Length: 471
Image (tube, rainbow, N blue to C red; front, top):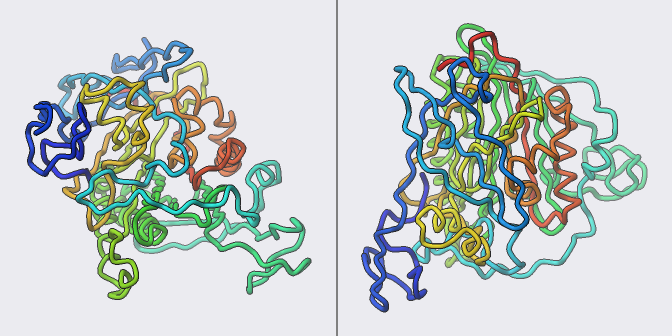
C-alpha cells in the first residue's frame, strides 16, 4: 500500500493538534499515546459472496443496512464477508470499518487528491477555480438517451485481444456537426474541447466513460478497459481507473501512465495463466513504477515549480475471469458490486486510503467527527515517487449470481456513497448496456454539481455455472 511513512506518529496529535515529528510515540504537548494509529491493512484472500441461505458454500451476504436519518450506512467491505481460503480453512472475520465519506469538502479545503503528510511536500493551497467553465465536453445526460453507434475496430496482439468502439465526434456547440481532424466543427466552425475532457470506450463486455466535470479546467482521470482470454479459452475482462492527485505536478500524466501500464501488464499476464489476483497485484506495482518514472523526465519538468511534489495518482482496478471477481487499489477510488437482482444487497468492495477512514478505524475519532473534518477526504495512499512503501490492496470474490462491477473515482461516489445508493443509480440494464449505464452514472454526477472529474467503468459479471459459489 502506498501510504504515509511507517511511523507511529500522525502529522498532528489527534488530541491537541500539536505538530509531531517523525518517530514520535507520544505527543510532547499533551502526552497522547500515538501508537494507536492503525497498521497497514493486509491483502484479503479469496472470499465467497453468496446470498443468505443460498450460496452452496454456506457463506451469507451481510444483511441490508437499515435506513438512517443522519449517520451514513456502514459500507460492505471485503472483511465483512466470511469465506474459506484455497485450502478450505475458514477465514477470520475482521471487524468492519464504518462510515462512507461525506459529501465533497468545501472549496479550498484539503480534499481528494491531497495527501496529508508534510514530509511528502504535498500542498493544500490550490488556487481557486471558476464555478463553471463555459466550454464543456459532450454531455452524458444527452448522450445516454441517444442510440449507441454501431461499428467496432479491433486489434489483436500477442498479449490478448482488445476490441474498441470508436464513437463519432459531435460538436459540443451545435450538437449536430461532425468534428474534423483539426478539432473544429464542420457545421459551425466551433473549436472543440481537449480530447481528454470527455472519453468513452468499449472493449468486449466492458465500457467506461470519463468526463472533466463542471468545475475543473482539465480531466485528471484516466482509464483502461480491455478483454482477453485465459489459457483454457475462458474470457477475462478488466478495467483500471486512475485519479490524478491534483496538488501534485502533472497529475493528468500520472493517471494516464498508471492506467496504461497496469492495463498492458494485465493483458500480458492473464493469457499466460497468472492467477488474476497475483496479476493485479503485479500490475499495480508496474503502474507505480510508471508514475515514479515521470519524476525523472523530462529533467526540466520541475524547473519552474521547485516546491511541488512528484506526479502522483490513485488506482483502482477489477478483473472478471473464470467465476472470480478480483479487485485491487491504492487510494480512495472504489469498486462496488451491484447484483442484477436488486432485491439482493449491493456491496462496496474497497476501503479508502483516507484520513477519515484511518481515524475511524483507529478509534481516534467518531464517524461523525472524522467525516465532518476538512481533512476527511485527504488521501493516505497513492502512487508516485514521493509515496512510501507500496503494498497494494487486493481481494478476490466468487459471486453466486450475475451482477455489475462498478469501478469509479470519487467524482462519482461523492454523489452515491453507500452501496445502496450506488445500486439505486445504476440502470437496471447495466449488465447488457454497460456503455449506456456508464453515461447515465456520469450524468448523475454532473446533475449533482460535477465538482470533480468523473470516471466510471462497468464490468458485467455473468451468471456463474452450477456450483461456482464454493471456494
